[in-house]
Length: 193
Image 1 (cartoon, helix red, strand yellow):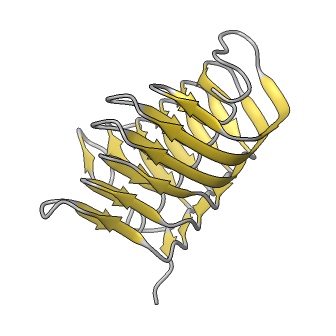
Image 2: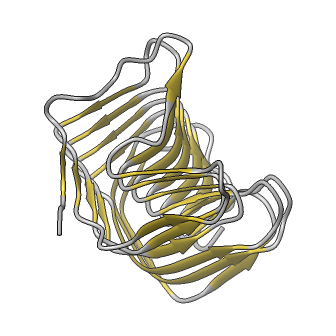
Image 3: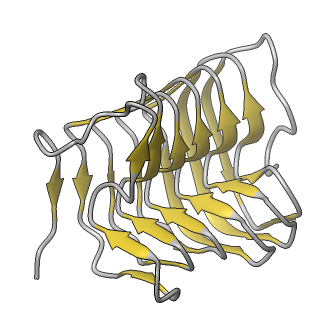
C-alpha cells in the first residue's frame, strides 16, 4: 500500500498520500486493508499492480468498516490476471460514503469508479475517470453481491466505460448483482452524451 500496509484496530482520520505506488496484490494509495473507520483520506498519484487476482483501490484495497469523505486522483493500471480495480475501495464489506474519484482505471477483470466488488453499502459517491476492463465495467460499482449490497444517491459521470470481452458488461452505475442484491434503478444517476 502507499501509506500504511495494514490497519486492524486503529481508525484513520485526515490522512493523505501523494506519489506513485507499485505492488502485486491488495494494492492501494492509503492502506491495503482497513478494519476500522477511514475518514478524510486523500490520495493523488499513479498505482500499478502486477499480481494475479489482485484487489487494487485508489484509497483502500479491502475494507470491512467505513470509508467516508475519501478522494482519489491519478490512475490505476492492474495488469495481473483476474484483477479488480477501482478509484476508492476494491472490495467493500462495510460502508463507502461521500467519496469521489477522478482516477482513470484499467483492469484485467472488474473495473469501477468507486467500488469494484461490493458486499456492503455505497452512498452519495461519484466517479468521473475513464474506465477500461475486460469483463465487468461500471461507473460506481462493478458488482453487488448479497442482500446487504446496496447503492444509493450515487453519480457516474465517466465519459468512457469500456470492456474488451465480447461477453463483457459495461454499465453506467452497476455492472451486475447476485445473491439477493437489489437492483439500484432509483436514486442513482449517470452521465449521458
